[in-house]
Length: 448
Image (cartoon, one colour):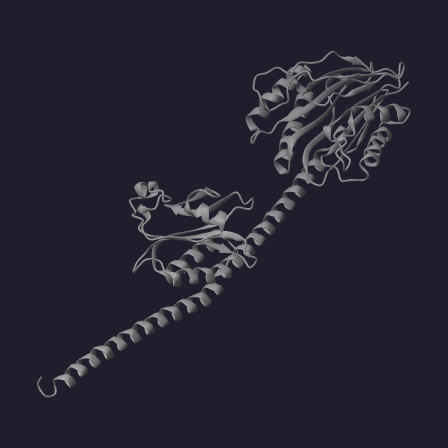
């Protein structure tokens, strides 16, 4: 062996080792730099995530933060629905926002939402859980997937990260750790946004209820009682906590006859109150121009059919009272049967519907019922289902029999006092619980 050969070999090996150490050091430095960038991004993300309370904008910020830190081609952030049955996200397609919904447990993102466990797939097409149909429609090629839960501080899943195609290498442990750290900030921002959205919705509902109640109050008769010949009429309307479409009215018609009406629009809120207002306007017009009650009800039904939406309908009782003779012509579209208490015999008669509820089937006739004669001291009571369906805390209903008992006991009073007696009996029966529906009562009583 030549002199100096061994030292030269060792020197070469040392040089290679030194170069390797330098390269390893550089890799560590690059890794530290990337981690520093990520941590800095996490701090910035914490500020950005709390810069908005709009859920759509928040989803964009969460996704942009995750994609920038992990350097992937595409991604989606899903939120868990309030009922916990699905996850959803919104995507922009052109100028429209499209909603994506996935049932809990379905697909990779749905499975992560259900189990709270991260799923990492290095080769999407080799994994049976992957559905390639979206790729086929879009032309995008999914190679790798990282799907991780977004958990709040209590560990409950509130959303899901789904990231596709890491640009440099398969998704690694560092990516998982970063998403886990981002998850805490994202979950807090999501909960804040949801609380804000709930607050805004509550304010909107309160405004709608106040508007609906205002409409109802404005459209009820200015005075709640009326003298018609030898007959006295009184009405009352007691709103529940929400506003619905209950309605009563007295209308001076042609030839000295007086129209009375009690109606109930399905549902609650401003929409129901507006339908009630429309029905009232038509009915007041018909009272002056349409002599036949059945024709008026049929026309009203056809008008309402055109404007009813969302499965709404209206039950309505309308009577036309001749104050001189006591003759009451009437028609009822699916409304609760009013009671006629006969003073001479002490018994009751009910006036059943003469047609279906209004606003559902066009062209169907709402015929006139067989007229009745109100004699001296007779009591006639029309009402909405809020009366008979008033409930106790255990679910017992006030019912028709109790209503008859109150009418019989208070029949010697004036109409306003009879209506008040019914209200008092309901409050006593329910133990003072708030009404679940409006209570509307109209009473006619014959004089001598």
